Length: 309
Image (cartoon, rainbow, N blue to C red):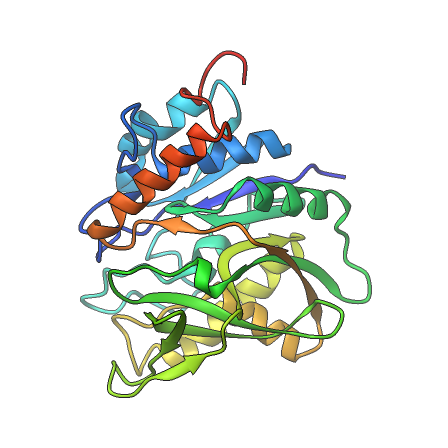
């Protein structure tokens, strides 16, 4: 059986942050959030990483990230390309936005042969998350259904004080499997809890405290790739005409559809770790402080990429 590998989605330009937030240093050693994810992944057992990037960003990614970590883990690059479309489809005039997280993972169609985990490049997930997803993937095989997993976070542990965020809000069944997931693209903190809007902030709906959300940390067998291929073409045929410049093929929505069709199940691996990320420039100070505290607590060494890794 192939050993689990890690797929890191890093093709987004971070429009709300104002640049390539994936390579923004968050300490005085020049470490980025992605450094801590890679460090935690290696410690958990991952031996190979695929970076999904835009081709035009390859040089800066190699310089800032890939070349630095490649002595410690095998690295390969996959390109998310707007022109990577099924036969008969073309990029709409004026479209510059990537096709979304589902399309990003689909970019690995010809690369991945075994189980894999998927994360965002600009999110801090916590050490526990990588351990539990790796342990799941080591034993993951499909039977009468696809067997996938998702690391689930408590929503209050994933919010920013500085604006709205997107989260996949989850419903679990009695056995701890994912029953449904709804992508909410306009969530904000509200007192001790959270609320979302479907009409650009005109009205708000409360999200129950303690709700489990997806931070796009998934564990898949490679059966997901064939599903994404078929569903991406369906997405283009149904939604592209209505919103040609911004419609996105979301990974959580594809997973949700697989569940509704009874084709797969997703074990929710709960974690109480806090998520940290830089969605907005104002978030950076909080992330810097959090990493400093984790280092002071002995979770991380001063220098991540030392010889004793």
